[in-house]
Image (tube, rainbow, N blue to C red; front, side, top):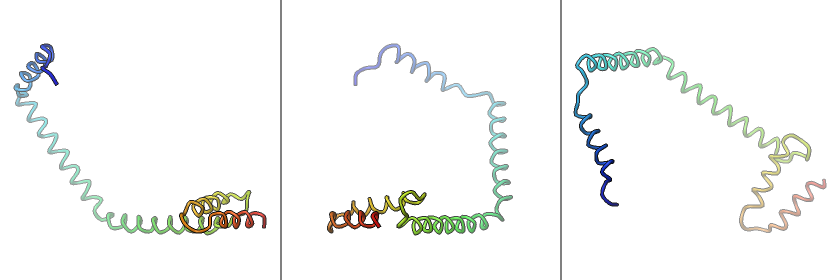
Length: 119
């Protein structure tokens, strides 16, 4: 990369000069007070929610277990769903995944799926 252009060098010099100016003391005091107030209010909000933190963890665990159970139920119900049913997409995904696995007799698996459909 080459040298900086004169205009860019001038812009950086002006920015450096402006950054050495400190804000007025009144502004600094107001900013400091605002930051302290924000920290104190956050601490107060956290303290107010402290008794519920354990409950939230248990609820999250229960919700996770319920979602896992629901997903397993949909998978089991759609494992061999007939064409036209709302869960037939689960069966098609299972068949595609089975066919994508390496090894074994792919033609045999395809014929098995075709026979299942004919039944």
